[in-house]
Length: 164
Image (cartoon, rainbow, N blue to C red):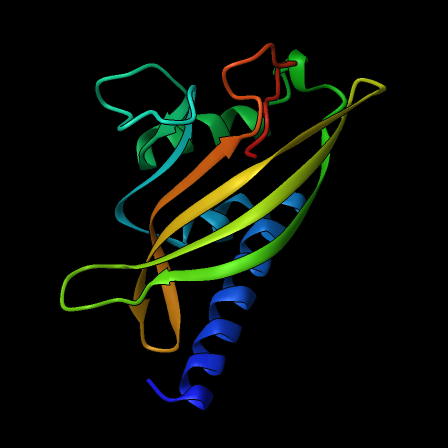
């Protein structure tokens, strides 16, 4: 891939990731859900070197059904643990393309993040690394898997109801 093509791809990946976390901060759950491919998953491992989410305990591991359940809870007026609803701000940097898409394999991108959450009068911050498996679709992408590994994932964590 020539330099102009590589720069364009880098820009497209960055803009996709920035837009994805903006949807989370703006609580636009349906639009965020539309970014996932059929069978797409969201995963927050409980350990740094956790090899997979199926055979090990995770902080979060959600397919479309589980994301829908969580998002319905977000909207429910009787979800007292979410009153008042938490506010978040995701900051993303160091977006890198680790593997370009080839044949049936997805594009793999990584980034670093800080998510600041304000919940029940208390500020909480979470930091870590994202790993995205992205399926190129025309001029955008669909998420096959988003993995959010917290810096302190195997330590003591304050409870967050939100997506990292």
